[in-house]
View 1 (cartoon, one colour):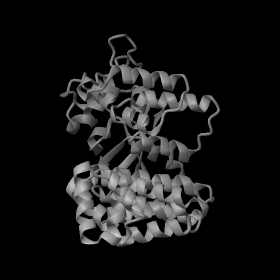
View 2 (cartoon, helix red, strand yellow):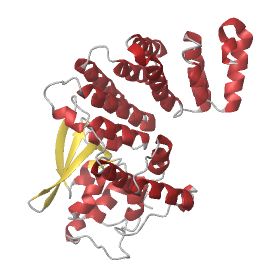
View 3 (cartoon, rainbow, N blue to C red):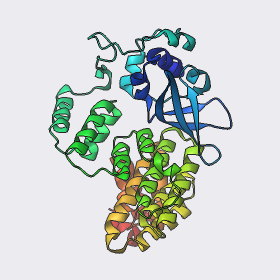
View 4 (cartoon, rainbow, N blue to C red):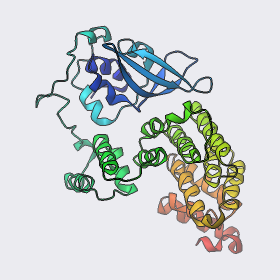
Length: 357
């Protein structure tokens, strides 16, 4: 497999002038070599009179869209994120192939049996069970619902093509698939770049319809997911902006407050995080239990992205603020760390922390 530092050059060599191959990177992320642009999402690939054009939404100056030619892509962008199946395809590309030679690549894809376009990536190194994959494939193609654990299992192992097929089949069967739901689907699969691509339409919309609050909130959460993966402060700023936009669609939206709670936790301010989680419950109406579970579920996702010692410290901070409301955060700790924390807190104050035991 190609080393991550060579991904962009290898991609240009692999894709050449073939727009089908280039479109395999739609929804992925890359980092511009221009210091004033930073991190961005590849929102689409276009055929511009026989030339490849790559449109990237950058996170600089509040978010602007830039375009770059296929031939220049490797010279302008690095830090490209790709699913494992596409990385496996790039492993067949000679690493010393300079991007300028990509113009000589065939304009039509090689669909022979030996072609990387037709080969399935070998996921044996991930310890995956063929029986499990076969079962999930059958469920997906027969239209049975894939639950969140199924989506995460497939996403983490690079089965993006199967996930896309499942999503398309759901649409064909008449399943209502608004952008917010598609965004949530890709977040559950742990592919936030796809979630961001699904909600990019918001950036070009002039008004702020109330129904957009769902998509803005999911987009904010997807940026927070990106931060969890790479600790990029720009993505956290974008998450905050998107959550605020959700609140312009509907004032006092509980789910937007939940998202802001997670964002402030990631910014290192647990007091402000607690404030927004509290506001979410205040405006939850009859959905208080669901809102609390949703908010702490997002917080738990971020907690699981840090080492156990830091995770336990953060959980303790929240328990000291409200042991009853934040009790479910204990589920994000390994059994040993959970037991040690609970025993210590109960010994300190049995009246307050006794229900945790």
